[in-house]
Image (cartoon, rainbow, N blue to C red; front, side, top):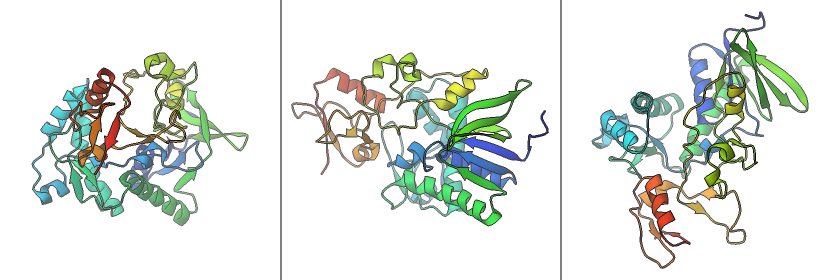
Length: 314
């Protein structure tokens, strides 16, 4: 192992909710962390989430008398298409503690709970703010920034406009990452946590989307332009395995700009709009699906019916 490897510094690639959760957890356990994000500001797609965060057996549910369980959430998850029960179980059993952690550690309001598509109980948590994804993600960003300020950058650092280009490997072990910022190639050493998101915004001919789901290349995306699969590609280059990359989710609803209806990037029309009573109508003004169904079900019904489709709200 190289002497340049600081064992108490971890590197997080990606500044969305996964990245900032990782960074805050490292700091909680006494480590040092540097977060690299190729955008000019952190947040990623997480900051766009407008429905909330799912959790079962949370304090909020119990206080409201909502009957839910990890077993029921697991059943919903597997019914929704999850193919690896052991991974789904981790997701579900950690969901409640994660929601409680967000409330306790960051003083977040997650007091409103709704039942959204694919769920058998009310378990999507949010607060009174209009944009829960932004509220949650920014709270975690601000904690890392506060520790950076208070420690003079010795405990935490956030580096934006930093595009990771390759993982540094020594004796088959990843010991750091190389990145480009301001035209300079720089390096950070330490264990690397990949939180760099997906690849749904890469429509180039050699993209992961083109490789695994060429049938979706014609559809618009609600992903930020940063979602080009950089982290997946870097991992594969050093021998990491990838799985289930063909599972690209198609969301049924987005906001269409009247003056640019064919724009390749659209803003998501969130699940919550259907969860609170929005109706989906086909070209002839008829309902054609259960609006509370899973996303794959709703989009499947759209393929069978006549476009354009409209989401109607009262």
